[in-house]
Amino acid sequence: MGARKYAGDYRLENVPGKGGKLRTVPVYRGTFYRFSAPPDRLRRAKRNCVLFLCAASLGLLVPMLLTGELLRRWYVLVPLVLALVPAFGLWRSVFHLLRAGERVIREHKDQMRERLAARSVALLILAALSLAGQVGAYVSGAGSEGWLVTPCTTLVILSSIFLFSGKKDLLLEPIPEAE
Figure 1: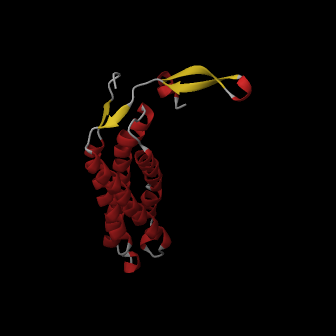
Figure 2: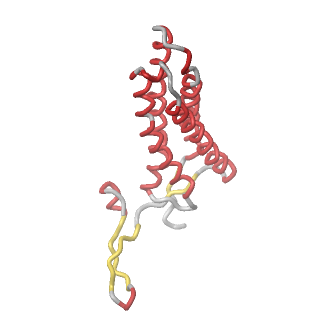
Figure 3: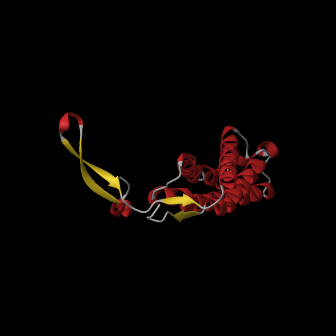
């Protein structure tokens, strides 16, 4: 059963368990949703989400392995480290997206579309802050040892923009009760 927000979507029912004893289990009774995009567009959107998220994750993790004067500055490194939080949340959203079948419950609908968009914007903002810090560090005379950090951060920014713009293919519509 999900969070308190989704508790109204479930009903407790008694079902016979092993040995004939009755067990009380939550059963989903809320509205089911389905993707409104055609299957080929949906498949492409799922694939693109995975590819862009892999690129963004790579763009976040590669700078963590580097050393140099650029990454010793807190205003460059802290936004990159904080960006790992929305990146992890994006992986959770994409996991729910990949596991989604024909019918999606409301909790997973929120996980997939709305949170994917919000987390990609958070990732964009944090990567942009780090990029601004990098530009400031270059202007103030940081060495060029960390030159790979800037393309990686740019990759994170572009990937998060594409993740956000891909949400239009992930529209979900309620399934009528008659179906």
